[in-house]
Amino acid sequence: MSRHTPVMTVMVAAVRKAARGLQRDFGEVENLQVSMKGPGDFVSAADKKAEKVLFEELSKARPGYGFLMEESGVVEGADKSHRWIIDPLDGTTNFLHGIPHFAISLGLERDGQMVAGVIYNPVTDELYLAEKGQGAFLNDRRLRVSARRDITQCVIGCGIPHIGRPGHEEFITEERAVMLNCSGVRRMGAASLDLAYVAAGRFDGFWERALAPWDMAAGIVLVREAGGTVSNAQGGDDILGSGSIMAGNEMIHAQLGKVLKAARNAA
Ligand code: IPD
Ligand code: CA
Ligand code: CA
Image (cartoon, rainbow, N blue to C red):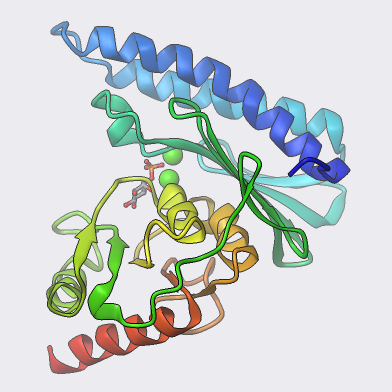
C-alpha cells in the first residue's frame, strides 16, 4: 500500500524495528543449532526482546492504548477502546529449529473489533498488512483470497494441538475427513502466517483449535480484507474468545465447515 494511514505507519515501523533483532537472533540460532548447548533459552530471550521493542514503540506512538501480549500479558491503558494484541514470535518451534517460517503478529482492536493487522516474516521479507475498509496487502501487492469453488481441489492449512492437549482427538477426527475431501493438507507451524496465506490465496482454507488471541488477531483482518470469510471452527462469530478459527473464501469456508461438522457428528 503506497499510502499508509497514520496508525498503519506506526504499526509497520514498530514491527520492522522488532524484526531486526529477531532476524539477527535467527541467524544466531542457526549457529547454535550445531552446538550441543541448544538454542532454547536463547529463543525465549529473543521472543521477549522483540515484545519489548513492540511495547516501547507502540506506547510512544499511541500513549494510552492497552496491550494484550503473549509474554507480558495484559497492560491496561487509559484509552479503553483500543488494544494492541501481540505475538512477538509466532512459529517458535520453527525458529528454534532454524526453519525460516515465523512471524511477528500485531493486531489492533477497537471497541472489541479487530480493525488492523500486520504480520511480518523477516526472513522472507514478506510484510502482510490490512486495515478495515482499506484492503489487504503483501508488501505492495493487493491480496485476494483464492477463487476455488470446490473443496476437493483445495489446499487446506491446519494446526495440530499436541497429543494429550485439549482438542487433539477432535483434530485427528477432523483431519481425516478434510484429507478425504481436499487435494492437500499443510501444517506450517505459525498460525498468523497460515491466515496470511489464506488472505494471499496460497491456502484455500485453514482451521485450527486451541489458539490464543495473539495467534489470530492480525490474521482475522487480513482474511476479511482479502475478501474471505472467517469464523470460529464451529462457524460462530466469537473467534478470539473461542480459541478456534476457520477461514477461506465464502464457499470453501462453508464447505470446510460442513466437512468438519460431519466428522465431529460421526465420531
Ligand atoms: C504457535 C503457532 C502454531 C500453532 C500453535 C501456536 P507460538 O504459536 O502459531 O502454528 O499451532 O498452537 O501456539 O507458540 O509459536 O507463538
Ligand atoms: Ca503464537
Ligand atoms: Ca509466540
